[in-house]
Length: 260
Image (cartoon, rainbow, N blue to C red; front, side, top):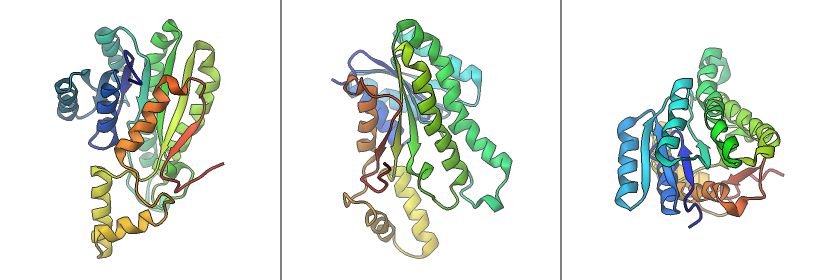
């Protein structure tokens, strides 16, 4: 098992990759602290993990609040005694409108969850990681941070800031044995994307399958990666198989975007 006896904290767990990641971490031997604002959902995920024989706790968390982030870290330590990894996947998508139609306050709200929320979580887990002389931080980014997506400026900018701070923290925290990487996702086939494609199809008067075919046509692998496949990329970064890797962004998008 890739994560045997490790303790992993995951923020922003929802019905897509977040849930798959929590289940996969537990399957690979980790004890998992599952967090999001939706208490009912994360308790259901913890129930799934427990039913499969794993160990997990549910900690409702709003990453825009310092006290919530500190409580999440403290809960993981109380339950499991250490924190080996933190996955910052909490995000706010924004209004999906052009910059000229939005507001700076709207952009600030997206940044507060997606970027500053991750920083709050790093601050919350850092004392434990420094004390144990090891740790692993994985920031969930997106292809939109390097590839222009109309209307996604607020979200893309927040994720681009997350890319930059990944490198910055990797350089600063390596002396404590702490690795910092990003997993940069593209299209991920699962419930959230399925719903998004249906909305786009309805707006254009075509079928969801037609919209999906357009997307797949831009992906060299000829298919849309699943949210579980993308979760596997995160597990790799959390595992000792990536022990020599820090400060990188691992692109998991089927080859749609290939940055040098």
